[in-house]
Image 1 (cartoon, helix red, strand yellow):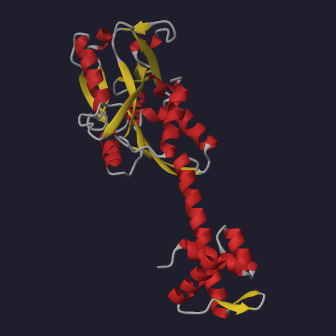
Image 2 (cartoon, one colour; image 1 turned 120 degrees about the vertical axis):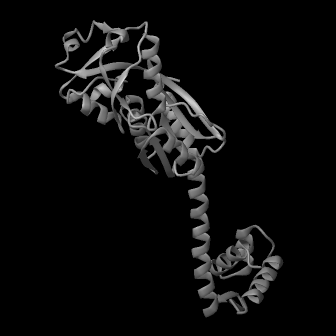
Image 3 (cartoon, helix red, strand yellow; image 1 turned 180 degrees about the vertical axis):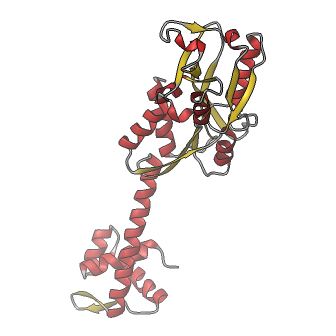
Length: 302
């Protein structure tokens, strides 16, 4: 069987035009090299080198073989280098997912931007979807990592790392009676919203935020009157701006500065936060994935 060493022997002999000098360059003895060249010619079924009084001359068949051998050795070197770069996280493809609410958090946007600048050889594929769909994509190896808000009921084979808890705000039409409060100093108790129409992010898309809002309202003494459900958090804000109700959203969503909406802080005695988690497959961390996780943790100060 022809091995890579045979290809290297043939290339060096062709370059040197002399068996003894080629053996010295390869760090082996001349007799074994001559034997390996004869063995190679036998496997190929053609004479590759014409023996001359003062060296060797590459035959026509030999030139063809050496040319192809050089290409194969270059490809092997490139494959090894690409593999090393991938293992280090210098090259490759990283598929990153996020929920619609996580997409607007400054930590997420900063991590993606910083990673792209620091490791331009890694191609980022970004995907926005619901938490259940993101988890399914990670299990199916369509995604490497995802920013999610909701807890994962079946986390077998996954690593779910908690990154931070984000404050939530009340989003209400700017014509609402409560919108006249000082948005910087005044806070609102959830109990004051007992009679309001709520617009929530559809539960199958974001069970974590949905359940968190319901639980917080029940803790405040009322069951929220859910008037509308929207497939995306951006859609809930559109419905709020249209005057169809109020909603509770992560603070980072207020950065959108949607016209027609006022935001109020919720009183600190209300345990209402939106968690931000990182989901990955367990024990399958490529070099690029390790660097991305490090970028996220560094951006959070952890």
